[in-house]
Image (cartoon, rainbow, N blue to C red):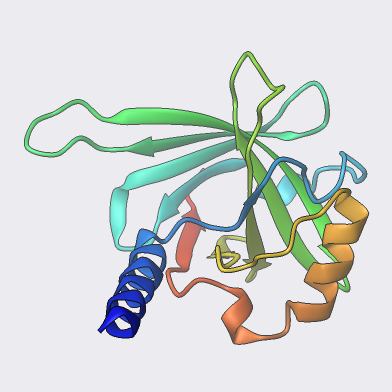
Length: 168
């Protein structure tokens, strides 16, 4: 009987993690700002199928991406804008975005990771890296090596990818 309870609890926890849909997170970015920001990413991007949702990408003074994500309110509520700081890292020809919320206190920053597939000049596909990674990394280069060894597998990404189209 106890074995069934443990199995049920394990399945419920697994299902809860699966349904949460948060991308993999870490206290360290994939890399420091090491490459010039591709100006093709700068501008306003609209979420496919939801024109009220959009992101605006600018270059900040540190060479990072300043990203403002607008989500409309529901049932007459006012929409919200969340500001992020991002940095692109290229691993074996694939772009990954390290993203953290833009806050005053960066000592407890949490980075989230996304694969960025640029399709032409006005379309990007954003795939979140699965939160099911158990490994802990002490450096961005160690994490980048792990990403490079596993990024070709479909299970490395969450199933909720988003497509954005450049509108400005």
